[in-house]
Image (cartoon, rainbow, N blue to C red; front, top):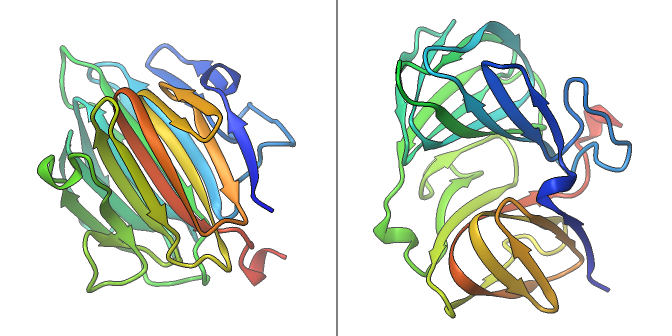
Length: 244
C-alpha cells in the first residue's frame, strides 16, 4: 500500500538571522520536530536566502553528501581541497564530505540576494575520499520532462554521489503531465518538492514550496495546474548500517 506524507510550505521550520533567512523541511539547528528528522537518507533540505555580501564562514563536515542548487543570484565556494569559484543560478554543486572537509559559501554580490537549496544525504559508506563536482543544468532538457542531474553512477548523466539516489528537475507547463518510474522500487521512496507553481498528484494539490514524501510505489503521475518547477528526489528509505 502506498504511503504519503505532506509537507506544507508553512509548516517548515524557520529562522531569520538577518544575513540568513532559512526554512527547514527537516529538523536542523534550533528547529526540532521529532516527526521530521529525515526522509530515508534525505537528512536536510534547507531553503536559504543569503543577504548581499554575507555567507557561511569556513566550517567542517564529514560523512555527508552535500548538494547546493542556486535558484537566484550566485554562491562563491572555497574548500580545503583547493576548490574555489562561483556557482551560478542554473548550476549544481556536489560535495562528498567523507573523511572531512572545511568549506565556505558566500554571496559574492553586493546588491543581490543569493537563494539556494542546501540538501544533505547520508552516504552509503563512511570515510570516502572527499570530492567536489560542479555541473550546469540545461533549461531545454527539463522542459516538460524530467532532467536527471544526480545519480549513483559516475558515467551517468549529471553529477554523482555515494548513495543509491537519483535527482531530477522539470519545468512543467500548465495542464502538462509527467509520470515517473522508480529506479529502485524495492528500496527507494520519492520526495517531491514544488519549487514554483502548483501541481496535482492524485487527489493532492501541492503549491510553491510544498512537498510530498511517497513510499511503497513503483510509479506515479503529476499534472501542472499552472506553470511549475519541480524537484524530484528518489532516495533509499533504509538508513545505512553504520547509523543503526
